[in-house]
Image (cartoon, rainbow, N blue to C red; front, side):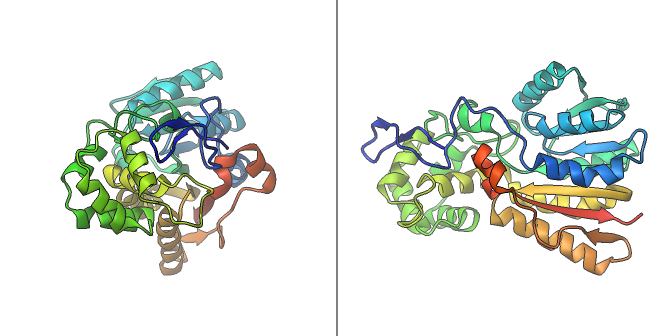
Length: 333
């Protein structure tokens, strides 16, 4: 799919990068049919099952789950207050009930109760409410809204360079770029972005400080040949932007903690599904689920020996889905 980009000279161009995002693209939940298929055996046998959507986003999965299982009670989390507002609008337009909660309000059947919170704290939240989940979903993909309209540095055309999902937490991407030593920047790009030219890009950033906008950063990476010389299916700055976003939001740390603590909050027979979009995320999910199923085989079962991938039809209809991988863990009943 095409993406607006800036060429090495800095002038705005219409270069087409297949991994890009058009502003006209509507949010489409990834692997939706597969998620519903894994949820169905659990949720159809319960009158008022508890669903935890730890990454509400624009509520595509949650709306589908509530329509498929009308008696379900949904506790939905997102770190970004703007995403919660967008989700509220979509849920309401679908004729469903949505409430923003800051306390321990009850979960009514057929409704969404949301909370601005990282899913790394979801297990504690369930404990505080005295709940066990019947189905847990984490969709780790970055929202199309963040890429096309948030204006916080996720897009290569943004004048901001923030990248925080929750503005109350942590340092911005600009602060990292302008204050970290070259070795730490290189580590971020290499470890979180798997960027082959991490050292070269890190040195270029330090030599051109201050870096104040996403546009400036993207142009710098383009000049330095970031992204490798062979893989041009994605924008050359993709790995650097991914690495910064992961570092700013501690995404891998949050995922590891959630995969360690949330299985304990599954009810008997319940399932936890995680959709990841790159190898760093998938590796954490794979190892946590596999190790739990092996060490406590009498309690947990891995339902996906291999990750579930989108089929050709979904890939054609929704290009961002092509890197998605679904893994599912079940607590034995």
